[in-house]
Picture 1: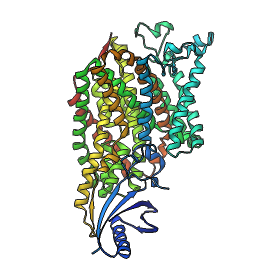
Picture 2 (picture 1 turned 90 degrees about the vertical axis):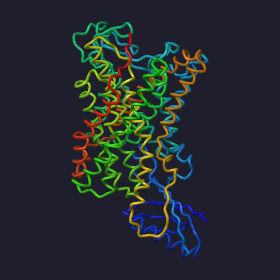
Picture 3 (picture 1 turned 45 degrees about the vertical axis):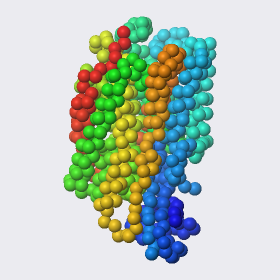
Picture 4 (picture 1 turned 120 degrees about the vertical axis):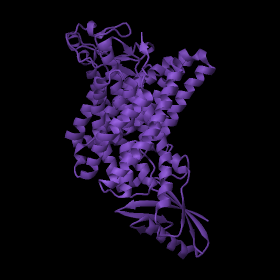
Length: 80
Length: 501
């Protein structure tokens, strides 16, 4: 199973927009744990690939002329 | 609403990078129409060398401005200027709309920037600033105007004046700068100009193919060596002596040693640093790029007047951001050609020194995606994870970080090569339009870049940067600049631009 979520960064916190839920954390490790917990609560078991796409609108607009991409992540969670 | 890169074509109509490619290719295609005897580019206005008292005694717009080709010689100079404004405004506004910029602000900002650019460009062509006492293309402007003195700076004076005016606005009229900032996009303008420079490279290849290939390959070699030397040393100094954390040291190393803002964002993304780090480092880079742009071209011109290509390549490795590098390369090109003409009465062909600066930078830009990819793998492997999931790095990350305007630049270059090999009989017609697009169009885009780069540079932003600013200054002038020059010398020494007869 594959899911596409948007990743953002505001007020010194990472935010994952997962479906209709917002998962926030101070670090990416904590965010990943939050995503794992969320997935477990919804899907119970199985292997899920989550693609996190960083929202570049979080950067000041003048940055996009230099580099319009930050990063995307591809994570695999085993819920079993 | 969010801006994410999911599919390979994302951003194709919404980023400055892609729009540089589209705009550059559009102008290139217009220029090619001369193959079918259709001049679709000769309307663009260009400034003429003029002299103050001569103009005052008998004022005429035609002494200041002319069209770029004789096919439009019946146009009034002001109509040509207005048509130039209207065309550039329409095309860039279209791009601004797709980039989700504020179109109203764009139109106002671009109109002001266009007007100031032209004012400065005309002023910069006053003979006492630009005329050189030597015969060029059968003319000696110095003697024609019967001058007693001249700074003899050639086209370089216009560039420096535009930069000065931009800096004054950006630092002393900040309210006004904020009103026009929406349209101050030096990277967009310069990347479009670099695409057009592909035509020049194509023409250069026709004239001296082995030299051009050698220039391109030595640029790649120099950039590669610079990566391997600059980055680890700056990272080590940052960690060991400035006690920076891993992420800050890595982002700063890329920013100082590779290609400025784009490298710092790419590296921060690769190692998944908080965006606050590249945003802070970017501000530092933009301000320091201005120092490099102002100091290095006259310095290299005076300390090594007989090493034009080495000087150009050294700029490519030292000056951060594409805009500042190309701008510095353009000033160096003008200053060195003017100096050689003045001292030895030898006229080097223009564009070669600039191309040396840009080719080196382009290789650096191309490598950044690969470098970030490698860093991302190293970072993930060395990260002590507190989670159980697996993470993989997708190859698409290289693509998303790849500068797309480089594709257009290469396309234009290779298309010229293909024409040379497969359709040699159409080359002379293609060159008629190509000369205008890579000449007047490109120089006008450079002028827009100089003014815009000044407008967005606010020196007061250095306040509070303390440790980072100190490391940046030390690394740049104490290490990157001299070592960059040495590497440029090793790879480029002995190369000289062709001499115009």
